View: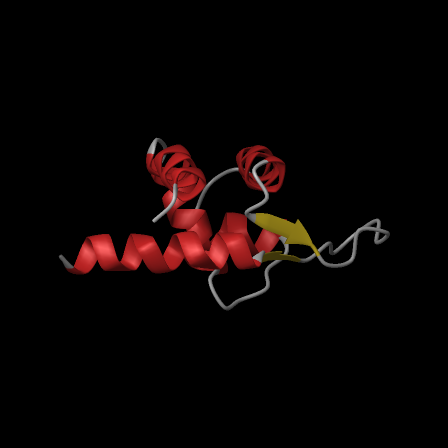
Length: 91
């Protein structure tokens, strides 16, 4: 694990909602409203969490020109962080 991954892992682990969201997005594509329903949190919180993950290069919108129904998935970097999280949980 390199220094950049350690920093990203620390960023994700600092919030239980970031952990839940990044885990939910692993190998999946969701809209913000679906995320809100799955995690049972308000849509404004989902929007903030997605923005944080995007800003750190962990998630991306795959249809940014859509006005409604924007879909999000993890970047390769985000998937790497989830794999590290899964290893931590198993140990």
